[in-house]
Length: 485
Image (cartoon, rainbow, N blue to C red; front, side, top):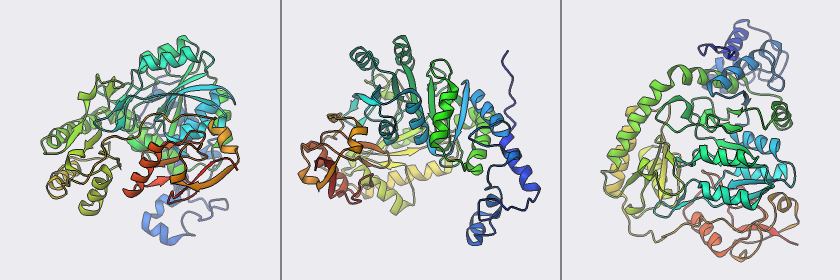
């Protein structure tokens, strides 16, 4: 018989508050000793926050082997997401993705995944030694972005790779596109493959009936979920969810303990506890407001000449089975400026920080902390920007989004001998490192992939747009590491 959980309870947060009430004299770590050792910082952020920045102890349990208040909090989280188990993460969903792949794949095992996966998925291949079987995501050329993957392409990859161990899915993509998850999960399970879901941007799905379904609800085996992105917890706090069956919980725990810190932040973990309570008890109400605000904003933006706020009208396009309306993507292409330029204008001229700018779009994430007033300021800024910052300079018609050619596995490329050459001389070479714009952190080229002319030209374009390029040894990306000596 299923246990009835009281989601008004916050066992870990309550234990932390009770510890604080006791005025314990600390002779353990951390060394700031309840904020006394770093007074300038304590004065700015508030001493209370540093008083509960403490170390693992009996009354507060331990993330590596939880048996009391962390265990209770994780059980509440599992219940909140309809999973068998939940594991708190303090290294972000990036760590959860790596733990999922390590749990299922050993060196040489194949894993089917879309190529528009986050860098953490590519890095998980280096750590685990798994071999990627990339599925080309569907491309929307008008917006210049990758969408979801089709059931047909997943089926084809499974048929061509019957020895694959897992399918890795993104739910939703950064821009809000949702693949036909239920059917893909059923196809994978029918063929004996585990299904792992990167749900970094879907923590809120479970808590409103007008949002897409979560991977776990639809039968996925594991999902890494960023409550800090859309659920209200502190940055870097996430959870790993498990439906036990194909995957044993003790194997998951072993992978987590191999990679995760032994000094887990109680600020991060207790914020997960409180965010879960808020989502379960008030999520429907809060997200109803969020959807109302977002829908009104879309309608207003689409009445502004030169702007297109894309949304659920994309459902039915290849790779878009559903759409997360809380992702407010705005195409600025018809203003004659790039999304990179619009991103900078909004920040520098209007004091508004959006999530990202790309070649044609900006993306604003609307979530539990937004207000009608803040969204109105964004819409007003976009309206003003459409008058003041039009241009006829942008000439780029298409974006390089086709899967690069994989020559060797990311792990083999990572450990191979490398040399450094000029970026413009790299055509035809095999990359020894990842290059990506961040956000969204999707590699343009990853270790082991062939560098072609289109990739080089796209990277040069991103440099000219002053995009934040990441993960290269050369911070300016004038040079690139390639395989060979």
